[in-house]
Length: 275
Figure 1 (cartoon, rainbow, N blue to C red):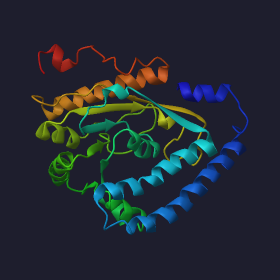
Figure 2 (figure 1 turned 30 degrees about the horizontal axis):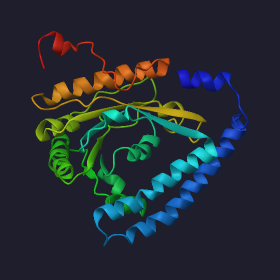
Figure 3 (figure 1 turned 90 degrees about the vertical axis):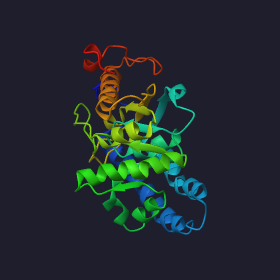
């Protein structure tokens, strides 16, 4: 991976193993302290309108991304902002670390996430999360989960919220992939809302299940919206998976196309006359 190769060949002050560990410890300390401060205060915002609650609670995110840059020298760059639709839509994002769950709030706001309902049971953190009105699904029942995504997600779109979906369902290591789940695509098919695909290389710098964060600049590429009108859920998923997968490969090879440049190579369904 390009980011990993650059880390192994370029050594800057504070990038030794000990330096990275100390910086990551400092970041973790700020994360814990800010959570202990924001969580109880967030509960006090319950009587406020939703947007006021959202702005206050997501202040935790803004602080921690700033703190991440100060302590771990980990920054980010968004590309393709011109592709963001004027109205809230459905976001399909690659999921590699905890970083993107925070950073996407910069661009798609206010937003709700599709997440497992057990997260809402975590003391303080989960309670604050519940006040942001996520789409909390029961993953034990696949059919019921899809129904919840369509029902609640449709309402959130009508209320002016972006719906963020990690179609692979869980964090996936760089270079790996999982089958795309159908729930977000069914929501797009039923609601008619476009899907905005997002690719990024956060996993190279903030790996899943890793305490250490590596310095550098995470690239986030926002693709052209995928129109869902007249398309099946399977086709929507295929188009999103193709764009994200192709962009991820180019991104890690160091030659990602301009974010506004759509990959025009036909998909198998298109070659067969579908879509």
